[in-house]
Amino acid sequence: MAIVPLLGAALIAFLNGANDISRSIATLVGAGVRSYRKACQLGTLGTIIGSALSFWLAQRMLETFTKSWTNQPLTSSPVTLLAIVIAAVLWLIAMTWLGIPVSTTHSIVGAIIGFHLVLQGWEKILWGNIAAKVLLPLLFSPLIALALSWSLYRFLAALDKINPCLCIGETANQLNPDAQGEVIALVPARRLSLVVSSAQACRQFLRHQVGITADHLHLLSAFSISVARALNDAPKIAAIGLLAQSSLSQPVIFAAVTLAMGIGSLIGGRRVTKTLAEKITPIDNRTGLSANLTISLLVSGFANLGLPVSTTHVTGGSIVGIGISKGAKSVYWKVVSEIVMAWCVTMPVCGLLSATIAFIALRL
Image 1 (cartoon, rainbow, N blue to C red):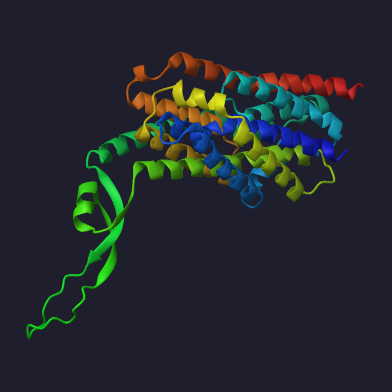
Image 2 (cartoon, rainbow, N blue to C red; image 1 turned 90 degrees about the horizontal axis):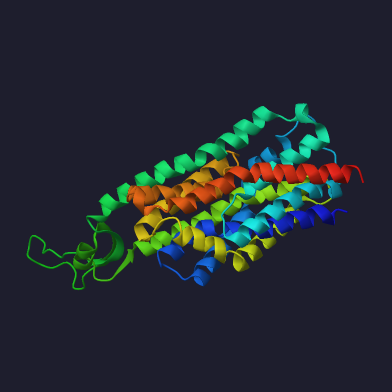
């Protein structure tokens, strides 16, 4: 029966990849920096790297999802634990098909709480831990993301007025005669120079230069989000296999999660990506970069603290923030309200599904 929790974790990882790949590549697609196919390939690579690294770098997150729920050890069979998997999977399939970005974190948390309520009762749940480590970060992360992306957009807009460019290029040292009027060298010495100036100034002072443009930074930020997202999400999904107390080791479970998440990212994310890229607010290079920097900073920071912030909420808050910075009318509020409604019902729906399935399974 050890294979049951492994397959369950892998299935959720696949759906996580399909629904969540959009968080890292939506701004690339929306701004026209890359086609969906090329952006998806970049995001999948980052997802695989982040998920693999989470085995070493996100142990605190793993502890949050395996030890922070009840005041006594959880003992259950893998079959009973399928309540968590089925509840989360049904919800993620429905939302991914509809193109609505929902939180895998919320789905898992809701399903686990519902499962624990049936198995151990209300009084055994550590509600203080759940509020501090899960509910508060999930509640405030969209607001923090909105404020930070708004500020970054304003900063980049001001910076853009001077047309900045970071360039590495070749310059020649100026040769001066010595006191006797003799030139020391016959061949000019050349060296590499780092110039932070306008693009025009770089072209004047550097013979051959390599410039770091907004496109390069946008691509780098998208890749970093892919890594950070998987670093944040993989331990939550791996926790499902570990909660079952199966004979499988952590490396095996993390390997299965990494593979499934990569496959899901590669083949299943188009509908949700279209929603984030086109249906919340118009995105260009500057706004996309602002959103991506915000997402990467917050998701990585929360993951390092062991707080299971939702990448979905951070992404949504960031994109709304850049929309508001251009004017509230540039945000498609009807779509935003539909997404927020889905966020609000995710935990209750998954909790109810999980509790119902667990209740039935315990009486069979």
